[in-house]
Length: 415
Image (cartoon, rainbow, N blue to C red; front, side, top):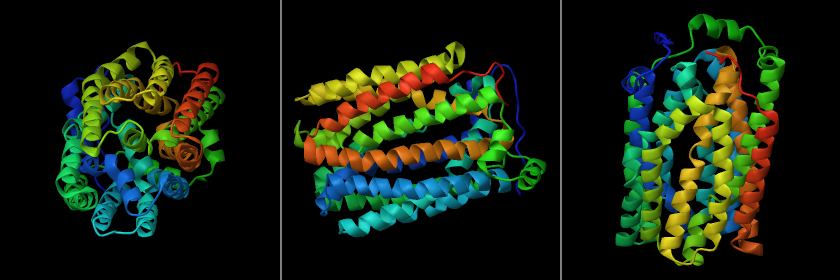
């Protein structure tokens, strides 16, 4: 096992300190990986349809991947707490190289479908990665640190959709997408090498050994939590499941709606995605600071509720400018939820069970996504393209109510 990283707990954390140790390593790796994946991810739905798929099959593909993740995430949480975080993260990083390379060779939607399902096994490292981040920063600055971790890797991805749109405009949808996948395989390799060479373990060896002597069942997690923390965590994870369900209803279908209803081509859609990333990059860190200062629960509720009018407005868009404005505002409104949720979850969960609690968070998201993706595809294709977006608004409101009523921030955050 690599030397355990020393965890500092000062009352204040300067921005420069976040780039030292594991947070800096993860930022560097994610910058490279995010730049690459951002080139192809906005256009995956269009490519899948172009090789014989349809919206319903697209939803089923997403659903199968997330169902696989449910099992893998639970295993990943146990492994992260028992055997350490680092090895899982590194193995999954190298595993991820395989899939853009395969996508470059696939010409049939059925093979693409199965390859996407195999890619879901890489989620085994997700609990370990989230736990590493939470372990590596003091509780008083968790949301700010998580926001920084999400923002700095986003800088290069501002240009990624434009590059992907250029590939498609220059070489056509299918050839352009495959050429982009070859490039992404290279960036994924570089990202994995950064993790291999520089990432350090954050859970102490004695804690790993102690954890290994106890059961990994949900009951063992229950014993480590107070009644109030358990109640808030269950509500928090349930709300996240609803949010994931709502996002899965629409995430695959923004580009299809923009293309088929608003008549926006791939390059111009790439411009919209780049604008979203740009504004998120500029505004997320101030939001993280506000969450640490004024309360994570408040920021989460505001973020959820402000998404609702913008997603409805998107369905009424008929011009590029209308779609761009509503999608950018929607991205800005929604970007504050995830950092505040992750930080509040870490505040409620002791370090020794944090990997398992994080796996329950990921599982809640996977279950919501598995149900929402095919349902969104059915509504889009069989009832009407705007229907998934209206259902999104209803589910988001339900999640906000659940957080308002049931979630309480702890008086003293877990280290």
